[in-house]
Amino acid sequence: MKQIHIATFGCQMNERDSQTMAQLMAAEEYQLTERMEQADLILVNTCAIRRKAEEKTYSLLGRLKRLKRKNPGLIIGVGGCVAQQEGERLLERIPHLDLVFGTGMLYRLPELVEQVRRDRSRVSRIERDLRFSFPAEETPGIPDRGLPFEIKASVNVMQGCNNYCAYCVVPYVRGPEVSRPSSEILAEVKNLTTRGIKEVLLLGQNVNSYGLRREGEISFATLLERIQGVAGLERIRFTTSHPKDLSPELIDCFGRLTGLCEHIHLPVQAGSNRLLKRMNRHYTRETYLEKIGQLRRRTPALAITSDIIVGFPGESEKDFQETIDLVATVRFDDIFSFKYSNRPQTASSAFPDQVEEEEKSRRLKELQAFQKKITFSKQQALTGTVQQILVEGTSKKSSLGWTGRTRTNKIVNFPGPRGLLGKTVSVRIEAAGMHSLKGRLIES
Image (tube, rainbow, N blue to C red; front, side):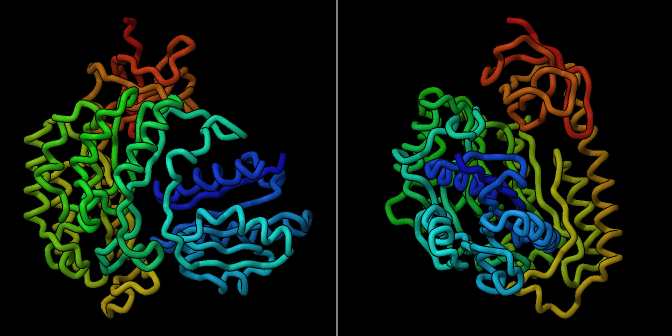
């Protein structure tokens, strides 16, 4: 059997796309390998949202030249957002690269690889194919052909974005917003549960706007209700949410739908109204805080995480301190924070008042140190509580036996007997770390 190695950069959307690549190539008799030197096919799934991820892509591609020299039959391909953004320029820049396939060509991957292999040609395809998920009846089996057994799965509900935030390249590399038919989504979820999946993560650039631009389609809140009714499914999560489209109907789903986990990722990006307007985010600090209040009044135990950019063009110290103040007000469970970086085609890349790199670094360090204290206090507050843990596997970073997550998306490591994979168990939290918790199984 041929061997495939997939390197993934970026977000959960990319992780899902990498799983799809593995499934597509498994049907062509390719087996996953962690060792690049053993691979007959290496795919690099790229992200263009931040410059650092793009730089990692080029660094890895440079290192692959050595493997290509040792094994001329090795096929090296690049997919994802950098592939969509650069196209044939990647082939010009990297002579040992064989294949470039854009975000719209994901489901054409097997035939593109075969074209490279058969013709010994170099191929670049970045046009758009409207498919963005397996039809349910064609979803490859997860445990087969070198793919790991899982109890969680990601399901695409939409792709693309129409928001055109000033800093974001997604609309340019993933195209306009397209919602997938709810009938297909439900069929895929049902299919997954018959294969042992207990938790699904619904993915989209802005899941809150699901169905709004597809005539006759249901809303995202209604989709959640229908997925809740799938037999065998225990947990539902979703990401990512845009604050402007967070409806009262969706807020009401928390606490009402027993399968919907008490966690929401709600990117705010900045705490200054002036910056939010420049970012083209379509909400204010005040409306964001009001929606946070509505969420917490509906579900007091809700965990809330967010994204924040520091050093956006024109950000003053006053703007930055308004962001710090918002973080102090909301007290997020955690944040993903980044220094602003110019991205091709975006509006902000042409803004004249760029912030110095040294100042960006200072602000990021201050923000992360501030949030770190909040995150740790939230973790510590869970000691002594009993949490329902869906067991995901054995613990890799601890001598403790098992690892899983609370409904609020906190990682918990704990000892226990064999046979717990995929089960939901009660665990008393005994110690808190910055990124995980330790607990003890409560025997039923």
